[in-house]
Image (cartoon, rainbow, N blue to C red; front, side):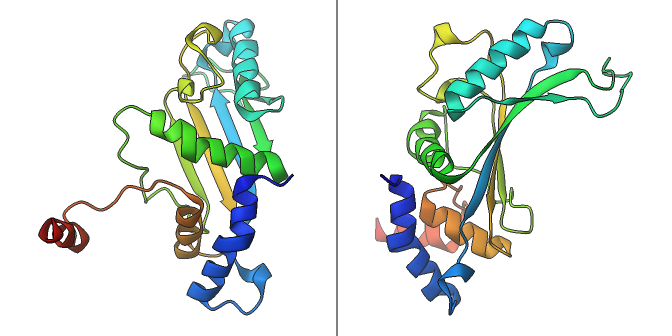
Length: 194
């Protein structure tokens, strides 16, 4: 069975994008390419077990085993040598990518404390979006007893969109909770209506 978000994309989102941007072919419409998750572990250089725990936590979140990342070059200021383990990463594609985004937008993001939306300035110029979470406990798969310490997590959503405008429209229709501008004309209209 296809993931819920993928079915919604094919039935509602892609036709809406084709109409909005005037695409003549359905393959021109922006689509998801992959989702990358990255977790840096600063204590990995002294304690390899903390890196293994981080890899276990990331595998529970992502649904597949992460790859270990190593330092590309030595940096004496940070006490890092070339080839030393410094974190882990996972790349999700196909159905796992759709299911992860569904959980991220509908379950994990509402659990973030004092959440007012994500920054609309985190697009890279080619329609891809990167966000950082300071706490991996927003995912319900992990409990307080399951984690060793609170770690941050970077998530990059890669799309086939050519511009930020197309990527923003696509991800907003998919459910990305972007922050609304404060004090704009839209807020004034809502204030008058209420």
